[in-house]
Image (cartoon, rainbow, N blue to C red; front, side, top):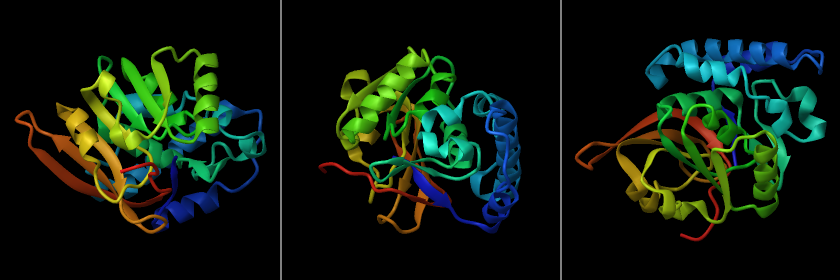
Length: 244
């Protein structure tokens, strides 16, 4: 599960500028150009996100994780363009900028435990694997979940565990979580995820109607257990599926 696009003139201009052909084998150079585009977008959306540059650790990981290994073969040539790409079963791999902003908002530290709802191809989980102690990720589409688990194992992300199932209810066994990322749009913030969020933790989730403009939300659980929310950016994600 992943976002389809993010709105804004800055994004459109960047996509147009990055549309030219790039040598498919030069993945490191492509990743660096992708990171440079993310940095430009971070500056242009600073008022909404609350900062004009993402954490250096986040940017370093974005420059390191091989996005081309998380897309179908016919999408490899487009792997480092700053846009979402289809991965089958009606799902997409998120736009790199959205991966970066969600990762940055989560403020994950090396000792943290993270829950991801919506594994998709496993790209976001791979990014988090470099930043957190443990990542637990849930995918409801079985073929995607099985493929992602195999891919993450092959890439030696031993601190990532994939589960097939309905992510709305979270993964109680490993709760509480320092951070929760939801990569599909919900009509509301799922109460089970709020319960499984650690005091002092952060959840990043798109909220809104399916296939319409939603808002990326930052949900924070204070140390006293109270909840605060903030709208960050307009986005459009595929819907969160499963039983409520």
